Every structure is written in structure tokens, then in C-alpha cells.
Length: 477
Image (tube, rainbow, N blue to C red; front, side, top):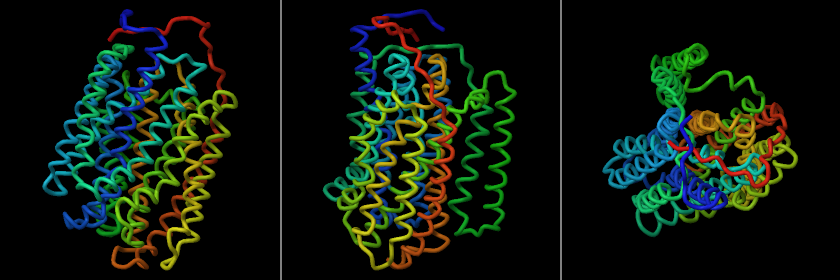
């Protein structure tokens, strides 16, 4: 670890600026994960692409995000967390401009890949920087605030996207990132510590194995119905992807410098938090992906109205997540994770049971609120469970690993929803859309039921309180 450096301002100011800028960056990156959902029907009309092309505008971003997280975390530990955080924000910002200038869906998907790489570098390092400067006994509150910002991104994504598509043009959902990203990068250089730096090594073999494995399985799920589940392309993706992921686990167990240390999974809270986060994000992203299209294509709503219609499931996090974080400091994460995923499962199953080809928005608004409360309760607590279960010196790799699980969960959620929907429904009529919508939500609800059992793995960890008045460690990088 490098020697100690200096940072202007008090410890309280350092913690505040790190929390604000880290949370704002996560908001910005999270916003772009879902901001495109309300533009999907517009992209469908402008570029003439089907559900597979539309799903790749979401999944290209999430796959690149997931594949970059552990690499970004490793580079942050090696070259300094603040430096690599700023690099990630810069890449995200520049690629956002390319997204806005895209003349076709292929260019947009390629730009979304680069955008996801930038986000994948920035977000886990933001979380690691927040964890590093926050005393253990206050991390639940800090991560609850971080979760509220991320929840706000989930809420604002469809709403901002709808308002911009209605009032301006879809390109402005990406132009919005440019000035905000530049401000975050500049302020970070002046207000945030450089962060812990270690002699971590880059793991190119692990990166390639993880990326190829996840891409193979996700791509096969998305293409399965169109190409046929027995087609060589799909079977190669499914079987080959699983084989490569197994090879990744075996390699990571044996290499001297793994990008995802398998020893961490001997900790039940770490494992439970990571897997619960995977399931939580699968439900969140599949919900946004399908419901936005249901509201616009089946119910005929405008893009702005779609964003407003999703608020019951998304805006609750803004108000509940900070309270949940403080509650986790008192009672532990286990009951909150189980409750949150249970509510998410209940809401998804209710939508599957209640929606018909003649029902309207009033049928789903109640279940959307239930889902919203579940997300607000579970989102910050799965993060806290992971970060509180490891030593602060391992905050970077723990943050990277848990974020990888969440982002891969988002990819698989959209991929599974696409596969189930395409197997039973289509875009031709509202009735055919609902025929695919209902079974997709049934599968997602059952997946969240499994998540409740996973949440039971988490144990309560006593915070190792730092003596009152002791300084926050300041590491150079």
C-alpha cells in the first residue's frame, strides 16, 4: 500500500464530497441503464429494428458494464482509485456523445458498449472510495444514501427519457451526460482522496473467460426464439458459455492474482449479498424493459406518460433507501433483503396474474408500488451486506465483485424476459403482447422467490467501530 498523502478539508468534508460525487456518478451511470427504455419504441420506428435489436441497446451497455467492473477495480487498486474513477467517467462522457450522434442502431450499440466500459470502471470505484472514507459504524447510512441516488436513477431514467423523447429528441438522453460527467471529473480531482493503491496485477485471462462466458449465455437467450433453441448458434452459446464460466471459476481458484478471488465466497454474507443482488437487478431491469413497452405499445401511452407510469416502482427508493440503510445498521441486512425480494416477487406475480389484453394501467399500479417498496428495501441492503462482510482493504475487489453480479443479473433479467416473451408473444397486437408479457413476469416473480431464500444466507456483522475523533485514513495513489 502506498504512503499517506494529504487532501484539503476536514474529514467530515472529505466524507461528504466523496459521498456526493460517488453517488452522483452512480446516478448518472444508472440513469443511462434505463433512460433508453422509454425511447425503445421510438428507436423501433426510426431504425426499424425488432425486439432483439432493442434488447441489445440495453444489454450491450450492461454486458460491457459487467465485463469492465472487476478490471476497473483491479486497475484502481493498482494505479489509484481516484485516477481510474476519473478515467471511467471520462470514457462514459465521451461515448455518450457518440451515442447521441449514432446514425443507425449498430453504431448506437457499439457506442453503448464503450459507454458501459466507462460506467463499469467508475461505479465500483465510487463505492470503494465511499467505503474507504466512511467509519464502519456509519457505512449503512452512507450506502443507504448512495442507494437512494441509485434508486433515483432508476426512477428518473424512464421519466427523463420519456420527457426528452417527447419534448426534444431521443439523442438528448445521451447529450445530457456530457456536461454532468465533465463536472464530476473536475470536482473529483479537487475534492476526493486518491484512494488506496496496492500492487494488484491485471488478470487478462480471467477477464476474457468471464466476458466470453457471460456474453455467450446472454446472447443465446436473446437469440433463442428467433434462431431456434436447437440451432447450432444457440446451443454453442448456451453450452459453450456455461463451460467457459466453469473454466473461469477453476482458473480464478488457481491463479496467483485473480480478478475475482474465490476465497471471498467462503463468507456466507458476501455470497448471499452477491447472489441476492444478481436476482434483484434481474427483476428490476426486466421490469423496466417490458413494462415500458407494454405501456407504450399495448396501452398507447406517450414516452413521457410511460416514465410517469413507472414511478410507483421506481421513485419509492428515493425516500425509503436512506431509512433502510440506517435500519440495517441496527438490525442487520438479512431480514431486510428477504423482505425486499419477497415484496418484489409478490408484485411481479400479481402483475402476471392480473394483466389481460383488455385491462388498463389501473390493474398494475398497485403491484408496481409493491415492487417499488421491495426494491427500495433490498437495493441498499444487498450492497451493505457485501461491503460490511470484508475488510476495508478489500473494498475495491468486493465492490467490483458485487457490482459484477448485479450487472450480470441485469443482463440475464433482460435476456430471460426477452426469451420468455418471444416464445409466447409478439408486437403485432396488444393481445399478443400481453400473451408474452404475462409468462415473462411469472418467471421473474419465481426467480425473486428464490432470492428470498438466498437472502437467508446473510449474517449480521458487528461493525468495528473506530474510536471517536480518530482520523479517516488518507491514502495516496
